[in-house]
Length: 375
Image (cartoon, rainbow, N blue to C red; front, side, top):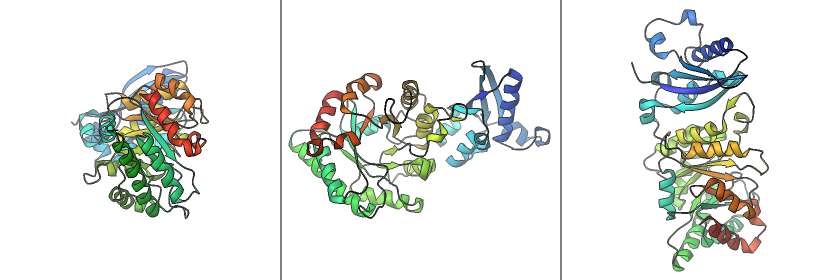
């Protein structure tokens, strides 16, 4: 019998008996999806059927249930693994996914990030200190305007020059026209840094926001044009889009994941995923190297506790795979940088977008100020 993987669910129930019945219902729903009395004896019952390992009361209205599943139920592909974790049960109220232990078989099958924290730091040449990621925006500007901003922030000390998730293939700056120009601009900024004695460099991450059928081709086009990483929105493109590129030996660039379209999975009080699961564990499972999440105190309403949960899930050494960089953003400002550094520490990619644009031609000064604050 193969080793099994374990998913932890928060179950909302009034009594232990109700919680037990719901847990056993999840075990059926996530695997065989038939009544218990007609589950075939033998391999299906002994191996494929989900099992309730433990059930413990958490509060007056919640219980933590740990269910185990066979790796055979997931097979070799990430979409089916996600389906087993929370397929049909995600359509039911009162169930939240809060934890995942892959076990040996699936840990080998899904090794996580290719680069992780160590790899991103090696690529930038910045061994210590928080990492700075200015955002190139807003949509509607020309390629030339984007390129000017990219050059300025790269020269001033950015670690990642990240395109906004809203930059896709709009007529004002089409992807295949924009990417080579911005890659060239970032390279020029890096050359100026080297000339000034700076041994670090900025990495350019274009957004893969086009059609799903074009995603792999666009990723390799970006790499050949000089990009050193990419941004993917798994809520739109799918977690498997990240996984496919992360496992492609010929791509081998870091991947940043954006949280757009994923909010409904975490915002309910009693349904969906915990914040740490969605923006930490699942991003690592897919193979992301950097996970963006909305910082507390901004316009998105995440709490400090939820943000801390995300950061812990990104950086724990317990997997999946190697630790990755959490990346808080959304309504951040230079004034908040010291506070953020105290809370999140140096193994963090700090995003700043719209606030930087207030500096206009002095945007490089803002980057240098961030760099000084983050070490």
